Image 1 (cartoon, rainbow, N blue to C red):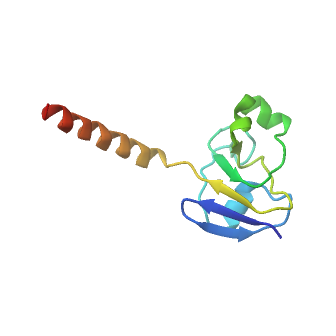
Image 2 (tube, rainbow, N blue to C red; image 1 turned 90 degrees about the vertical axis):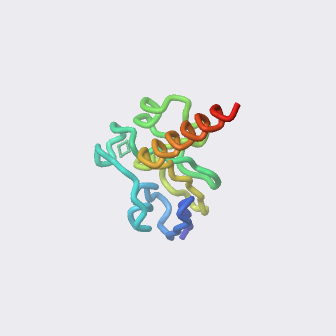
Length: 115
Ligand code: FES
């Protein structure tokens, strides 16, 4: 069974081919937020496929994501594990992102005071 590795938390799980990345995450006890229950409508389960093949985007995903899948960004509820290992990068949580932005702005302000 292929291995699915989730970064940056570095947690892995073996799943059967055809398992969605969202189900693989759940089995690995990795939290990927969802609001639509895997119906490809909330857009909250976006992940980045770092390496390894996953299924081609289906029509639902294509209609939501457009060409974004070409950059490796996929909906975890729609992309399925193939026969090979895959590495998935999880997005930073919105709260962490907001805190990091705020800290960076404060740092810029301090540096600006020194000029
Ligand atoms: S779970 Fe809502 S789009 Fe994937």
